[in-house]
Length: 603
Image 1 (cartoon, rainbow, N blue to C red):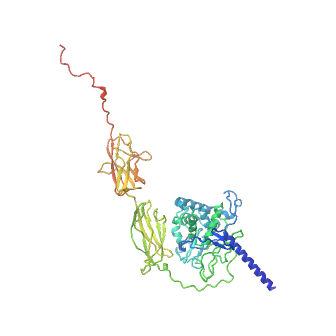
Image 2: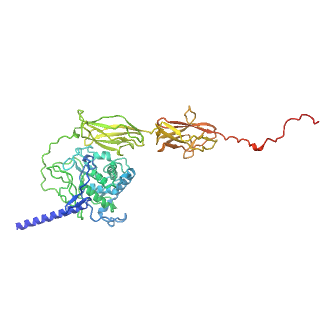
Image 3: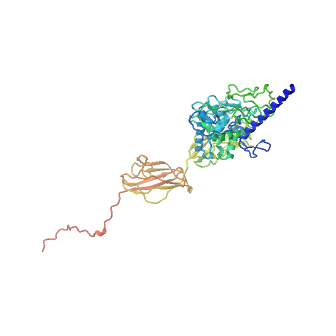
């Protein structure tokens, strides 16, 4: 009897194993770039993409994610009206506010970075994998999640080691960072990637509009074109560096591209398989065909058990730290908790030894609009004793109301310090917006005071203005000048484009005050104006002024043109009556009677 029972156990174990392998194979077969060898084993392409984005600079810190795959039956396009049951598979439904956030983010990125070609379906795929579409659309009217969505603390126990960077402001954890919000940003990445997507003046990772727009900008950095498959994969891997993550996101991307529909907020389904599940990778799923989970591709700490979605029994979460509610499902924890190994002795990293940042180069930065700044910003990482620290990553961030960027069009750059502890930022490129702004240097992965650099963008300049014609400019009183005035601006003999030109009708060469009579321009309402501003030369350095009119005052007047940089040009304008016509010689001498007096009586 015992032998018979043992045979039944072995048979059941074999059956379970075969089923698990089948589910895993089915799941893997849905992932792009996955093929099977001659024996049916799943293999990935030899040219599988990789990412060199370190965890502390990724969007999520390579935190856990949902691994459920879409159903095998693809959704079909359906109308946006009617009941949810009449609109295709429930998995194809996206909560209304969440879907609106994705589409608005796509629209904004199409305007701000048209070369990126960001599809909203990619944001939906990442949102599905990261938070189950904000936990099935549990958001308020403004798009903020009802309760914070917070991943596990990134303490190196099965995850990346990222010490606290926000003093617990976003994640409630002052020891380690946690991924936060519907798109699961870690605080250190949100510090530079955060955006205000709903126009309320705040950048909140818990708001789906803010998080979706931030995710779009994050995926569109480095001038990636997401219509290119290689760039698309690089962008996804930079979000969470896992081949399984890449395959899962791409699967949902293709699924959503084939059709989706809007469902009410709060009615979406929540996945159950997580990448840090302690199972062998078959996952639990929800019973739908093909919705098993894949094993995490993140390396685990040698000699430790794979952590469950909750905190380890021997390592409770920080006091007061909110957690991400788990929808339940079969427990994957063993009946007897494993004994944690003795903690290894930690050797301080170079980043751990940084006490402060010091300026290592120029202190003043200025450039003309449209030009590249001549000096680059450089920062040195130092210990408390003032010793240089190499191999430390420094983040440079452009702050303030400016369109200046680093080379490549990004406002953020990460640079590793060299052996002398110095990190040199990429060259700054001035935009067309003038004024001052700040570039802040901070240490990635360590909370030390940032170092601010002030930069200024000044107006474009010209040192010479010339008329393109020499036609004399004349007009009769109350009339208008027939010939237009066109000038050309140059700087050191070269064309000076986009240079602001001010035109003023002055009283005299010695008195530059605005004249109160004589020629004038007209504004949009037809009112006489004698000073024009805001006019700029075109790409060829040319500027044609509006038509000039004259009042009834005759005389000679001066139009003075000036530009930033010192260029000036005086143009003479004459207002006079037309000359009387010359007599016609064909009429002969005058025949008028003589008025000469008589010389006396006729003889």
